[in-house]
Amino acid sequence: MPAAPPPAPPDTGRAVAVALLNLSGLGLGYALTRRRLLMAACWVATAILLVIALPADADGVPGALLAGYALLLLLAAAHGAYVGLRTRLVWPGRAPLALLLGLVLLAVPAGGALWYQDARDEAVQQALLKRLTSADQLVAADAGKSFSTAEGDYREALGVYRDLATGHPGSRAAHKVPASLRTYYSKVAAPYDSQDYCTAVAPLTYLRTVPGELPKATVGTLADWPDDRLATSLYECGSQGLSAGDQDWVTRFGDLLKTFPGAPQTTKVAPAVDAAVKKAQKGVGGSGSCAAVEELQQLDTRIGDLKTAAGDPGGKLASAASRAGHSGDDGAYDCGVQEYRSGDFSNAQQTMDKFVAGHPHHKNRARAQKIAIAAEVAQTIPAAGKKLPTTASGGSISVTVKNDSPDDVTVLYTGPVTGSFTLKACGGCRSYLLADTLMSTFKPCAGGKDYPQRTLQLPVGTTYFVHKPNGGQATTAGSDTAKLRPGYIYTECAYTTQGFGGSGT
Image 1 (cartoon, one colour):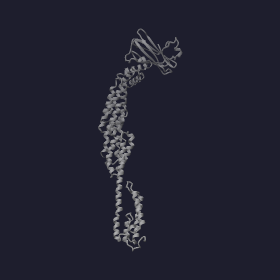
Image 2 (cartoon, rainbow, N blue to C red):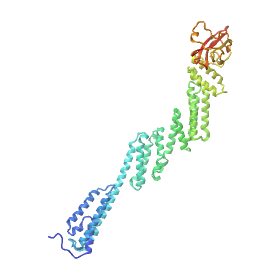
Image 3 (spheres, rainbow, N blue to C red):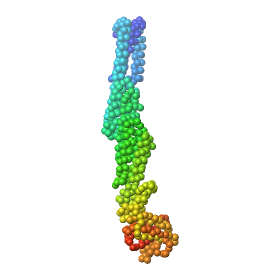
């Protein structure tokens, strides 16, 4: 039998019908004109498209494949029209019926395209929901981690929320972002719920930046959610640092005053600082005077830093700083007394010297001078520091101190009375050789010279002397312990040996 019927008279309607039947993608036009191989080719092309396209996913079918398939259909339609123009149909015999069938079958590819688009849209929705779920799981997995460790994950999740809300605003996933965001805020701010206020500062500060990353409608009431919590955390963390002596309290209170000037927590800052000053003031005068003085001095400095950084509404911080400064200065005397009594003579001397220099009219200034002198003597003669010196002066025993030295000498003494004075250098005097001082005939201040001297009236009892050279080659102080008794006249002689300071009676 022949492969095709003999040519028929040209029929335009039949040509259009074959073309439309081939547009279905099934090669039905070729089937009705007995072109089986071409029909099979259409089936293969359609099958390849279906294998690649199904099941529908978010990425869809590659554009090049769709373009190629569409071109193939157009070619099949054009060729089918050419074939159908002079070829009788196997069925139906009349062209109008075939044309109607072709129009009906066009619904197959059209309907398939619509179905595929719906399936692809659903695949996109599912993919977006999966991204949202992954972001939520990423946030949940960081529970219990420090903010510094989890911050990268938080920012990654926020990027997903932002992309869904701005890039796919009508998706089901985008509609769920506000709920995910509420959980997100709760997870990030978890330290606040645990009352770990210092740890909560960083994540809450970060959460205040989130509204700038998302549409306003998506954030909603969460925009102000961190504010009160952050203000509370800054105040509580600052208060804890203030109580513990941690210097970071200035930063916390400063951030609170600058960031939330009208918040209720801000009004608590000045009273908290004032309470810390009062607490430190209570420590002055007791065994913890030095620690209290140091704390007051630090408070004075830190309050000044806070005022500079954040201002001082109402001047309450300035008042607290003033009281801390004055109390610290006044407490320095008690600190010096404490150091002296504990045997820390070097620090006691420094503390009292500083107190004397800074308080020219203080009621304890005179005694502070005496304590500073006694503390310096006690550094050479520890026994001199057994008793705290008084402001007493005078006595019934004459003690003359002479200077047989080429250098000026400062004489310090303490005992029943305490004091100091300086003797000018002796003109014509020299430093003695160490060997000279070891000889039994050695007697300083016995050369008949006009030695610089000064006579003291001291009480009966033990007085400790230190002769301290001023300048010259002598650098080591000499010392002497004199037990003064009635009926005697005493002489102290200051002299120097090569490389050493010396004294004798």
